[in-house]
Length: 379
Ligand code: UDP
Image (tube, rainbow, N blue to C red; front, side):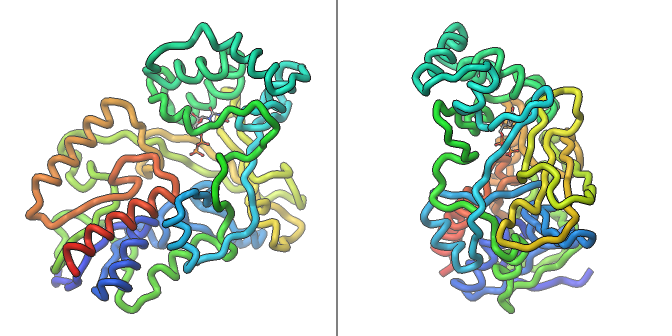
């Protein structure tokens, strides 16, 4: 293969890679080649329009942008405007629909009560007290100490088991911390983000703008391997999983993966909201997405699109790291190995390479921070 010359090489066209590429091209004025193994840009944020219904959907699961990090918003606002969508999630248990995260409405409706906030807090405390510990070793211990057995069994235990393919006793408590618990009627899924919404013209447009410079070239359908013949003047920034990069030298990292089934429905509105969760074990999907609700500002036609989400474990598409101690140790071995081999001129980052449960804003923040380090070295 003939050598391709570039100043910087970036492997992966997700948020991390595209933000760094944009910064390198616009601030350092250097040439960047991005290698993408899929046939499209944007990693798992990619959105496209469904041909049957004209509805824009997120190919790899519903993505809601939300952040309280000012630096991220200051950066991103030059690349997109957001609509006014605010994320709410419902969950269906035994044919009845409840609000999620668990709030006062969920508690009252589930237990057939009409508690005030303080009564609900006392009621839940009576059920959780016996599970209190100084340190919570796993997801289940943490969840029981927060919401007690009944709510846990209905809404959390089997959903988590389905989603992660593991007993919640073998998952880290940090995953449960993502869900707020509220003793008021606040139905927002996220805790007070400073900004929240869906990009007005979709996620893919953000990526097109991030990479529109003539200094950036994206090469699709390209599976990067260490041996590939690129002449890179400064650095390679690798954003994929580290085990793949090093041919599973220290064993495979486990990922939670997802599969999706699309269906066109002959009705304007199937479920009245963008996401409903299915926490019961009898359904082998975890959620149903209805993407038309993500864009209330758009006029869509008389058909709707629904997408069922099926969890898969150890599928070839990595989505979520399974951050238990074995995987963390394995990831540290890869990381240390790469850091010691500095002569390879390779650095890494992003959700896959860091093996971290980053939201989109955390990924952008990590990319901006990494660029600041790169800038100091190469300016
Ligand atoms: N979870 C649950 N029931 C639900 C929703 C979430 O048990 O109805 C648990 C599950 O373990 C999940 C975690 O809470 O992995 C975090 O949920 P989040 O909505 O943040 O997951 P994501 O949207 O990132 O897949």
